[in-house]
Length: 248
Image (cartoon, rainbow, N blue to C red; front, top):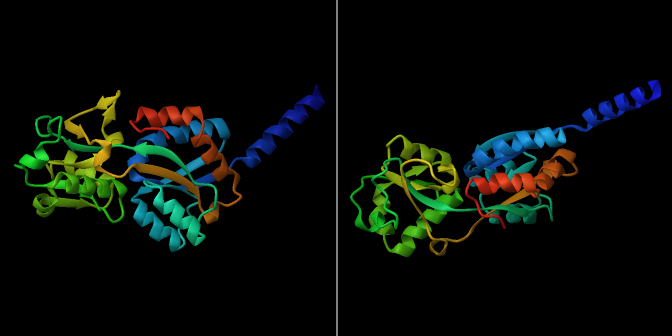
């Protein structure tokens, strides 16, 4: 019994020694899901996920300037591919963890109609949009307005957010009557939780394929590898789907 007890103690100590933390740059639209997943990940693996949230374009610049991130959960698939090509991310580690949906949303339940006709009718003073140069959901919003033929009329009314979180804040506080956000930011129990919204048809913008990738600083780090494997598992997929994303 004493030998068994010593063996169990040794296993526990070695397991604790293997537990690590991983620094993750997370696209702002994925804030809700990763907070849920982080708790499950720590409980199931012992590893701790330390997340920072922001625009993918800004993370790209920060990582190139030496930021200590080990994993990137991008809002697109182009940035991880580019980083692999440039040598700042690990080749073969990238994969699509979620496919995002674009939503035209207002905190006012009477503003946005079910077909998005307000974009053509007008009558609003401000429309919030994440910076299309660094935020894929902002770029998708611009593509939508361009395809609908309303971009020139709406451009002077745009209030630009640094990322999708700030864009959501502009709308929720009334600084802008409406704007383009990620569906995941407002979904509750499988539908738009408050205000009014139009889920933009997927044929109006390029697919928002969100890729994960291990960065150079996370190469050969067990916690980084464990996180990407966990994102491919059933528990993480269930969380991702519950926030309105499509799964690849």
